[in-house]
Image (tube, rainbow, N blue to C red; front, side):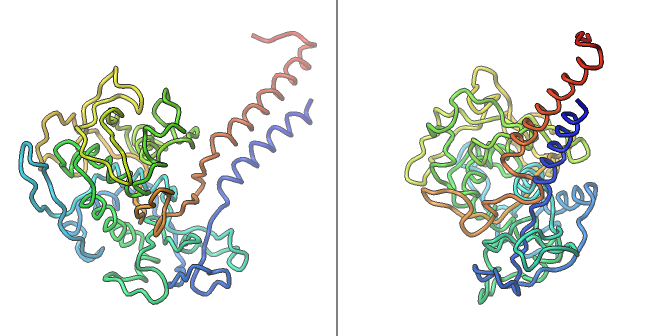
Length: 373
């Protein structure tokens, strides 16, 4: 009986190990660098959770707040004609959204001890570099290949978590500008970023919430227990509602758009009303939209709910439209790093089931076959 218990505990340990060990570092000098990653990995230590929260707060305020800690980002527009005309505004970003994207992509990590490719295995901790040259917590890809000369400091993208995250917002801002309005198109309203978040991973059918491959009765994604068969933006929304811990952030009860209003076609999504549903398929129950706690009340949006007391988990990746195939094309891992694998829930379920069976067998043996209440 002890053997069964030991086996179950080994399975639990193996599941945790498999989730935690994956760390790509396809650095410039690696022989396996087949995608022309152009910058050498930098050694470093990840910020603490508290320090990350300070970084997200800083970066959410845009260039006006971060100054020399990040590159410039062009203005984004605010308003959709109702109740106000669209006007240029300095770029700002809901910290809750940034945290959620970063958690989905890298588990809030800029550095890790590489596990792949073979030539890079082992300490010290250094920049996460995915096979397609996504660098650090923001998985910044555009501008990071050999021969590219972007208008930002590539070495700081590799070595400075704050600068990396700020650089990643350039792509998020570009998606805001390039996609149709959600509601009144107010940057401080978290839910008004729904289509931009979709586009961040690829404005493709694979992320269409009406895609027939997804369960039409699915509830909100809780990434802590696993929910792989979801559109990308629903995973991000899930990290906002179900943060990794209270230290990372408070839960934000984000609203979902009514799927009946989403008319996706040929990598285009027309404007949709403010999200008001309590879940991705549940519009019987309603929610109000949320103004980012990091951006204050500078913008007024009718129907905006109370400011949550904190942010959430997750962050930023450099993603581009993936066409019909979806996924990260010029940014973001497509893979996951920092232990945020999509099959995490399945591993945990298998391990816990094995442990439960072993404990039941042991308890019956210890009591001569009698059940214990």
